[in-house]
Image: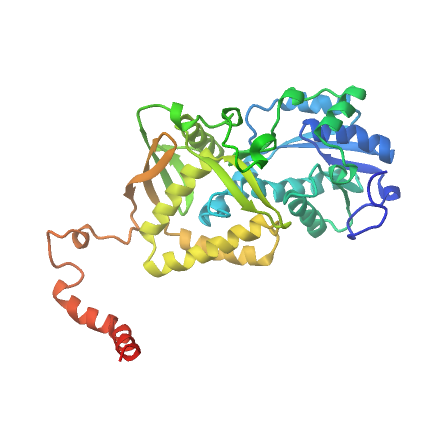
Length: 416
């Protein structure tokens, strides 16, 4: 066994406690090797759980068949796209959720749902242990294990990749030795990929070299901006109380709308992020993200929210948005403070109804039209060509004298 014998956390499994394992199974190299390795190393039964969060191009019948072929006593595939969109992405939209300015938290949002479903299916199949494929250097181990420990303290956890010290080449050799089919030609695929409805990340190869500009082959989702269409496209997103409900005037279900937004963004090179990120485990890392749907929807939502909010709401909410994003990034989805913040986000978003027009062009996405019945905006006041309205312009000098009073007094005192 390569797992440590000394228990460093109460939820970690000792080898003699592992009998039936719920494995979070993607069908990729890591989890396919894990499925076989757990059977051999622990002499345990394995139940494979695969969760569909909107990963593009995935054949779940093939994934399920592969798990069975590798000895899983049961293989479950769960379509969780609607739950992911409704219960995780929508709150993120209302909170304009980003981390480090550029990362819209698509992986961070997916992990607590994946772990929650792992708990449900572990109990359904009478498993004593949950296994995941996270390394010891990333944030996902925190998000998954914190969720399991919160929701199911009776279950144990193992993380073979964190303990077995096999690199990519060793994993490939293990797979060949044990007759494990390798998904998508892993020998020639240099990147570690994670994706769902809200975005895609790539790690590995040259990405860790900060002096290396992105190679073209990393962009398998979004069209490179320099080869995107030469003509811009105007799209509209309509929201009701902060939730996107229509694309170009056509009402859609949430999952369909997110997929449609992603297609438009991919076409026009929108949503490429080359990001230096401070992980919660103490590392500073570089990631390449492709987030076309998130870029479009978050840009539209933030613009509409500013239109309907007062200056005081808009200045205050940004601080809460950042706190919300940090809690989710840090794996604390079940922290009560997040639920407290959700209550405020829901209150503000009661007014976030309207339509935003966006121009998509060669990697850029910017608002060009705005419309809302709740807009804190008066065209008559905004123009320089008319007078009157809600206030008299002749009152401005008195306001200026009072507004600047303390600053003027302080300036004179400090320069007397």
